[in-house]
Length: 108
Ligand code: SF4
Image 1 (cartoon, rainbow, N blue to C red):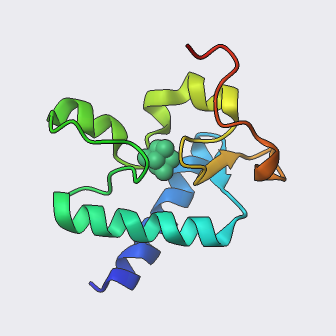
Image 2 (image 1 turned 90 degrees about the horizontal axis):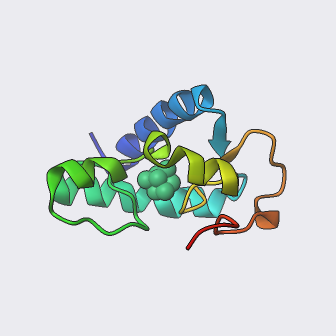
């Protein structure tokens, strides 16, 4: 499978998963493309499509929490922000992803 085919597969697969969680892809197509390309590279190098904006610890149990889409593991936080850390996914009810803050209000 080529990188392009893998990217298309991840995109299609993620769309189904995040829809069930109340999220959708951001409308920023350039960001989607950049992040999915990064995930394809991370998957080739490390064996899973890890999050491009969260660091791996090399502890497998912990790292599994940042395999995309990591929404179930950070649900409360992402619900508060209405987006995931990278901004790849936003709440279904959001029209303008640029209007969202990056950090939840009560984060310490
Ligand atoms: S923060 Fe977003 S892009 Fe990163 S793994 Fe989680 S859902 Fe995927």
